[in-house]
Structures are given as structure tokens and as C-alpha cells.
Image (cartoon, rainbow, N blue to C red):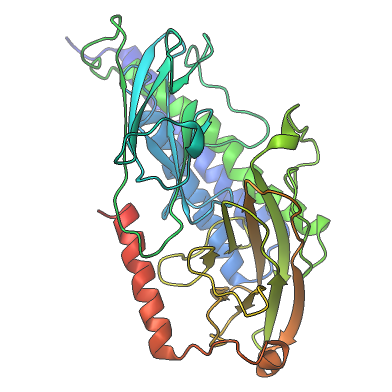
Length: 407
């Protein structure tokens, strides 16, 4: 079979359009994006756009077949947009509402949200593994229904929160830096009508995939950076916001009808620090299944998580004798256990999460102090972390990241 003129034209049009969109996004960052404070922020903004382009193409080409689905990490140690939780693997797959799937998971009893289920709602085997039936006729246990129109027709990019993701997925929580057990997560279509093999790639199919990636990239590359700018107009610098369900920087967002029972509450602070300053955050800890504090850069990206301590979870945080959690954001190591390294940025975001709270939730306090005077604001028994101890902490962190993402 020979290649015809239309095949070349379809692919050329899709390819050129994607390249033009990438060029346009670059010009927008370099020439038109407001609220860039310094050279680091400029470089990070353009890098964010490049990362999004790679992610959009990967998701639309490699993880977009509902007949042969695979789980993709939609935010991870490489794709960092959308303010991800560094203790979570965000998994997503494309499914078809008229099909039936088996999802096999072993997360070793760690917290997990998958489809409509949270950890304690799933029937597990003794070793912590479990299977879900996704779609098809209702099953007695571990059944996740699908809408009939899921996966049918062109993928639609939502106006709010455009993301590179499919229509089924979940969150795998990794809270403990000492827990290096690998998780497994697999999805396969099992109904009798399933095709046995994927179709060979055709020019029209690839053109459609590139077009879909271009549409997603057009939305995603601007929306998340613009949202970061809006958030900075909403919040006073260095003041912690209360935990809530309504996302900051999205004035047109309407909470769903069941928003009052959401299991996850977020709080935010827009920090701005000079090199000789630190932000001391202090809070009691509510009754929750999981909590964390972590920094994000100016563009709502997770920063360098593997080689800097930019996040702290309930599993490895230090609490003082009075039960309070105290962490310090700063440019240099303040020699305290709960250091959040800002990674050279002059400003950014710190995000905290209370997962599945019982009872009241506090709003943390924040105080800007000089690094030289920091210890005047800490309890007398607050631990001192010397460079060797910090190196040991970071070695554990790197090993933990490698177990999750590089093995």
C-alpha cells in the first residue's frame, strides 16, 4: 500500500499546528506573561511550558487507548504542574463506558483513593492486594461503575483545571520515607467484546492524537501559570490561609453538591523571603489520616523534591513537646528538622493538606523572622540538625524517590 497525498497532508497539518502552538506559548511566556520577578522565574515558566508540551503528547499518544489502557503518572518527579502532592502518585487511565475492566493493585495497605473508593472502603486480601471491577454489570464488592459515554468521541478539555489525564484513576499515598516497598497497579479490559490486539498505527489516527495534544496544550500551558498569578493577587504574602475546599485562584469555580464531605482540605500561603529571612510556621495537628506541608515554585510546580527537602509529611515530621508542628522556610539550612528548602526562589507557595479530618482543623500561624534570630522563636528543646544529619536525611529521601519513580 502506497502513501497517499492526504496522509501526508493530514500529518503535516497536525504537526505544524502543534509546533506553532508550542512557539506561541513560548512567545507568550517570554513577551507577555506578567508578574515575573527575576531570571529564575522566567526560566522556570518556560521550562514549565516545555514540560507540559511533552506531557500532553505523551498522554494523548501513549495513554489514550480505552481498549488497551495503561496507567500514566499524570504528575510525578518530572511532570510537576498543578501543585502536586509530593507524597502522592497520581495515576490515570483512559476507559470506555461500555466496556468492563479489571484493575489489580497492591499498595501494601497504604492510603489510596481509586475511582470512587478510599482505602477503608475496599475489600483487601491479607497481603494488602485487591482487585476492582470497573464498568460492566454491578458486582457484589469493589465495583466502580462507569458512565455509558465515558471514552466515546473526541476528548474534551475542560475550561477549569485542564489536565493530562484519562477518565479513571486515583492517588497512591507514600507517606513514610522508610517504606520502599514497590506498588503494582494494572488495568486490563476483560469483556467478551474486547479486541485482542491493538490496531496498527495509521496516519489519520496519529494526526488525531497530535491534534488532541495540541488542544490540551493550548489550554494547559496558559491556565496553570495564569492561575498562579491570580492566587498572588488573592493572598497577602506570608499569611497562612485557612483550610478549605474551594481552590484558590479559580473565581468561577462552583463546588459540587457534595463538597461538604470532601475528604481533603487544603490551605495555602504565598511566601516572599529575602536571603536572610525565614518563615516560621506553627500549628497543632488535627485528627487526620495524613497531613503534609510542601513548597511550590512561582508557577505552581512542585520544586526539586529529590535533592532538596521541599516537603514534610506526618510520617517523618518532628513535633515539639507541646505537640506543635514547627517548620521553617528559608534559603539556607536553619539546622532544624522541619526545614522546607525554597530552592533559590524569592517567592512561591507553601501548601498544606489535612486528609479525612475528624473534628476541627487549625489554621497554621506564620511569622517572618531573621535567620540569625530564628532560634529565639523556637522551644528550648527543639532539635539541632548538623550537616551530617541533614545529609543522612537527604540520602533517605533520594532512595525513597528512586524506589517510587526510577525502578
